[in-house]
Length: 424
Ligand code: ADP
Image (cartoon, rainbow, N blue to C red; front, side):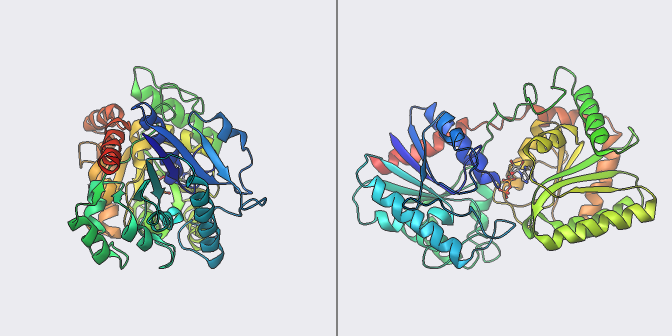
């Protein structure tokens, strides 16, 4: 079985968000099942270290636009939305990849998101290979001419990144206007939600070179040491008896920043706890977070939130390892990887009951889950977190998080079944 992945990101070559993690990890899991996977990526000017593509355990082919590098990857700071320029860039990329693959013997072209959504239509003109489209985020649907609607219409099979999100995108609330089209493909039996996994070798608290104190037998000392190290690095002093809250991710409406911005000041008036946020994206949220940082500092005479406005892979690992709780109050969440990473590093997730968060976090078992998207519900969950922190249940929940299985194995097998069903 020969499969070509076509995508806009692939870790570690070029990463903006979770899509890169998936494209960097799923091919390895498929290889372990005997599938030959090649990844096609635009060769962006922003790829500073193209050798990473050569060193990858699976072939990564970087496509130039003639002799030119592509701009990008994206034009908008939070990665969602699209400009004409961005649309043209990915249209060209799809056409170039199509020309190239015509003379190859791939069985399946696995297209990811709007950036590869024109390919299923182009492939209609050939008998083989067959196409699979994975929807990683409906909110990033792109244009009617080249975006997700094209891929959804023409792909031989459609997947999305969690079972719950597969249901949600068939509704008006989450379908971004494409729900009727998605319902039609679902009725034909051509839609399935397959949960994303993690590259568990890379995200491994026992061996992670980016984390100073590795996880050994005792999860508490793993947390305590990494927390102290992070607080020292940030110049913060926090009472060891109170929990450290964390967030890593894109600054985007999707991630529930409106709730964080309203809930946190309310909550921290009562509790002298701390929230560390590592995030880049929407400049308006960045400004409001900076204002909150200053206001709380003035109000309490000490900072109650630290906002780090950069993309920093090393620091992200340290924050997962240091945090007691991980906030993810997303308005919607196709799968979400950060809650999985947090759990793997023993940071208990606080999540909105939606999409992949619904499928991966169980209330009071592996995290804290709230249903009604709004400030009061998040404040309530934060208060529950304080109670939980000093109760014996904390250790139990942490152990369950640390021992959960987030590997790709089962999901990769499901993808392979789909490939077989299309190519036989
Ligand atoms: P999304 O794909 O919606 O951005 P995910 O939860 O699926 O969200 O994945 C986000 C990925 O990007 C994770 O690997 C996370 O650690 C990483 N990430 C996001 N923002 C940052 C940042 N500012 N610095 C470092 N890593 C980040």
